[in-house]
Length: 489
RNA sequence: GGUCCCGUCGUCUAACGGUUAGGACACCAGGUUUUCAUCCUGGCAACAGGGGUUCGAUUCCCCUCGGGAUCACCA
Image (spheres, chains in turn red, yellow):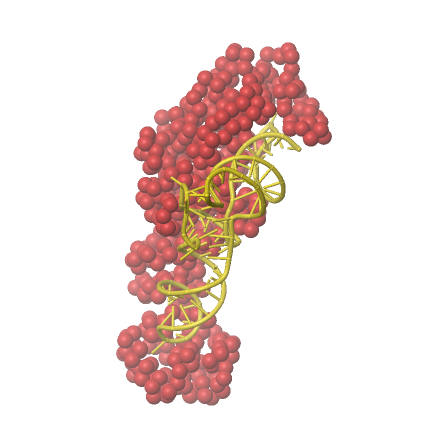
């Protein structure tokens, strides 16, 4: 538990969509802020104009909102430390850069990019790590803004504590003169995030492990800037399902919004993402949002990466769906964002269900609730409730119980079933009773008789319990479909 | 190659020196009047390897092996 009010931030660069791995640090940060009663801040790190993807800022914000990771301060809603877009904070970085220059801790990089690349390749040839400071110029020119501005580092060993990774340490050999401000006038991440986190009074930096190797450099810069470093927590990567590499867009990691569009519930996505590397020490697997906020703790986060298993996500979503009561499920929308107001069970019904009354669809939903893993499965599970599917002879020929009988035998059995059902009032109970009587009268096994009726009335490879299905279909439709099957023998 | 981190069933994980190494997903088998699913029962399945420390190591230390991250005018 975090005692004091934490200010955490999610600081993505607007270069595309958010996938399960990418959003994990956002979930952690949000949880820590909520748990402590502090604030969760969204800051867009748009300092690389070449990589920026048009519209991805909106997409990012939409993703957070849909998942229910509401931020208290951000580019679109403002806040006490606005602006929350780094491209609008250039003056701040310049001011801090000037302090460093005045203190003799930053200098203009005299080399061209090609020259630096030459140093780098030379180091690689010698199987040495590349250190710019080995080439640090003796006499520096004043910085005119057209050259990169570099940090004049003070190499030394560091020991520090990471809430997730524990005690970490490195030697002076990892400290280097990194670039603070690029020749295009934009600051690097390495510089900007430190300034912003300080100015925005961020207490906890939660980020992915790709940054851990840079932390000693940050520590060195914090010292030069005379800023106390925030608490740091480094989360391991989420790995792809099979590979050992981190989940990435390149390898087909899906946009989290795609899961929402397929009918995965946002609270499940959050639950699942958190469970990748965290548990509360008990055997509980499924947590509500409130439980997560209450129980989550960074120091119980696993140090090693976790594979993203979509099957487990599907199970978890199905389990949540089954816990929902029918009315909630029926009306359910899946997100809290602007567009997602429109996304709910009602968007997933098959086309043919459009004109059907709510009451009918709700009854159908009740039957499929226990087999629904995500809403996009609704059409294939329910289509036969809304439309006569074409006769599929292979359902009978492929059925081990039925394919032993001849066509005329089957027709005769179905004929008897038809008579029995014609007299039924078509309540579930009455259908059950009459079918049971029929079973006794014919001496036939349920596996035969029920399969036959089920196939005749649904033409689907799978369907819910027979009596319930028939009752919802209604007498007229059921008998009509039986007649149709009869003519096919 | 340097530096740092990690290593329990196929997967997500529990264990904070003493357990028949537990749970969940997936898979397999059986049951719930047909199918699919749910639910129930059962099953398969792991401490990377080797040295120490200890009365006793999955747990602590060292080495090896394996994996990952990083060494950008990207974040």
